[in-house]
Length: 633
Image 1 (tube, helix red, strand yellow):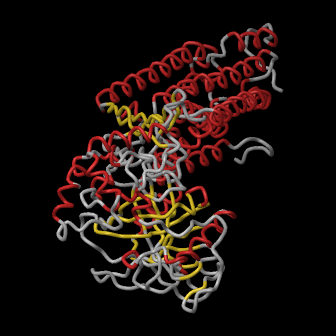
Image 2 (image 1 turned 135 degrees about the horizontal axis):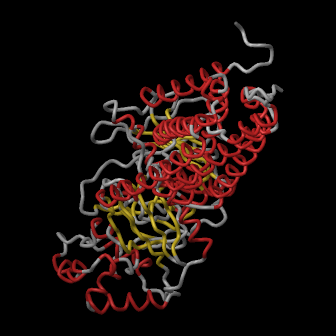
Image 3 (image 1 turned 30 degrees about the vertical axis):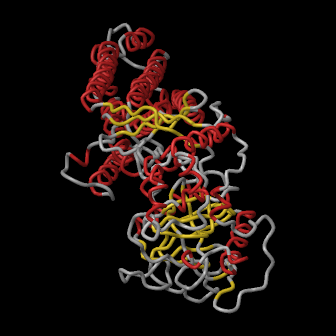
């Protein structure tokens, strides 16, 4: 027989809850990212304190030895966090410590923080001269603009036979001047004067920083006056085969450390052959950070390059993405510049295309006879495309990229411009054994908390305690499935703080039970039967339950927004468990109470746990015959 009009149908709510469980665990077992055996697919991601991992401390290095500005330190923290997150590291924590340290914590035993934690400064510099830096010589990459709607030029072939990388204008962006005669434009404001010779670069002009002057003087004393004079007098890279005596004079430079090489003038670093790319790459971070000075850097081809002053910096790059070009079906790196950055980029490509004042020598030119622009990340060149036109709009770096290599270069361009340089101070590995002990302790605490709630529920509410028990079990299963799915989809990682959040949520769930059941007792004391008291108690308790849970959710949201690290994990876990508790309250607790109210056991004070409430109702309405009667609503 159908229930009366307006009467609740508990089967519908329970069916909806069953559907939620089914969909959730279908996603857990079969959604994207589900791998391994069935048990492997049920493993949530665990945090650093539970599974072990690596923690590294970076200290900001300033030339004066003073603490950096707080704004610069925070900016560096954000960029390092973006770099770590961009690699898909689950719940990596990057926080500032004190006034000069940044601490990076990454879960997992195979975490590599060597390049993630190494800061870098991004600069775009014109390649003035090139010489063999001790490695094999490869073909130079090329760069060219593509007029809107036309395909990008493929570039020349490298020795391996694969197409060389190229920089093109993005389709639809402002076109460049390519293919025809260069436009007779004046040198842009702020551009460098003609490139000085190597000897001019090497001239020991009085540096503003006295510490640098003292370090350079110490190096001069170490190599000797004769070697120093011979090095600073060089007009071009030394040819030891043609002048063995010069090789003997410059021999002391082979014994310099990377720290000592960093203070040498750019001309000396470039012209002395014993200063190889291997040593230049080992210079401390920030060795060539000065934008207004010529510098020396190497790329993966082990070519040593004398680079012009930086005309475009990392802060001028608004965005960079590795994408699949629909025209060529090749992966490219798309470059977007800021407003001022676009103007600087256009001026730089104009200089390189026109080879203003013949700054670039023959060896530094690309395959098409145009200057190259080096993208310098910290001490190394990550790309040096030849400029084949004036790029007036957003640009693309094209070439033999894979999806991984395109996104890696985009990440370097997007996150490479740190305002500070850092030195690694401490790297600590947290063993998985210690993490397992933490996990065991956390689960034990959660189990004890749930057990105490269940014992109290059965002692005080008896049959109603089974509703509490089943509700907590269902909530736990929902939370567990959500943990696994969220860890796989958004990288949420369970930490000790998260376990604490779930334990606290047990109290929130217990509060909603107490509110409902005590309201039910009040309704029965007023003379209503248990069956009629259940919907009335629910209607009166529902608003209070929603308000209490809403306050908990809002507190969790605020805490998540204003906190970092493990505190965010606590807030997220608390909010998640509270939301799922509301789902169980509406789709299980109230429907199952409606079904219980129709059973004979529910009318028994000893079994139902309503106790005195039922006796009170009996006393108010019982006739002299002694038979129990309960007033209907």
